Length: 187
Image 1: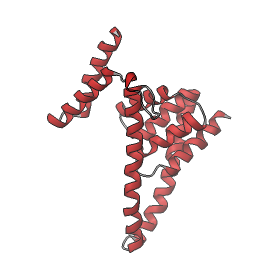
Image 2: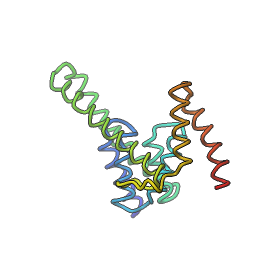
Image 3: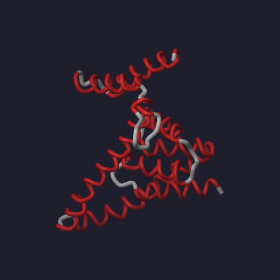
Image 4: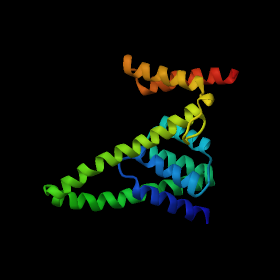
């Protein structure tokens, strides 16, 4: 029964994840943590960290890792199929109609209208990750006394390296990962 629930949950996530992988993160969070209660907030952040670090689209990686966490290897496979199947179906249908009607004003209006919503979904996911990394939870109001100073330093160094020196995200992940392994093993 868990496999059917996993498939349906991730099918629903895949069906409503407009705007790419980062736009799917709030939907994954809502479904897995709040609606189903399958994983904790900390497990979700760990899954996101692994999903970002591994090659491939973040939503598919998150589905695979989440499904594996919840129901083993078969769960990972089923969650991955569930999250990708709606895209395959929808893209085939939309491609047909888009190429047939791409010059219509209404089609261009729909595309323009979706852009701000996608940005909002991505910003929401980023804010959740930021709050959890810095304060240990994603709920407002945040308690300044619970700030993780090491995370603030890592965040600041990462932003500085990427903005000032144009360091690649891979270099930044390697640097902060090694530093985190060293520092957190002593804390």
